[in-house]
Length: 113
Image (cartoon, rainbow, N blue to C red; front, side):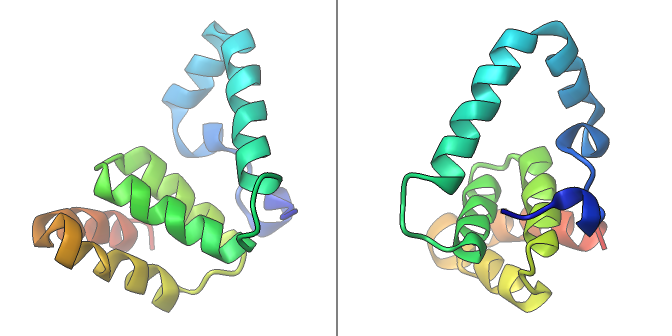
């Protein structure tokens, strides 16, 4: 398990204020959301940490979820995923999701550097 605090990523709420608002307004829902995310990310399959983050990056990018994409990029970098690996995952969007989708995701990646 990655200790994001020591890697410079304090929490999702530090990246997106709306997430903090969600947690404050719906604490029970947040607790269940967090538990489900942890269960799926850490316990239910054989994929390694870096693979999981790259998949999350690709899914967020393909769905045009910019906040999730920015969060997943930061957490992937904290877990040791390289910029080259992230760029490769984003480039893989082009043949399936299209060049405009790639460009939107690439702008999120470049904007966070």
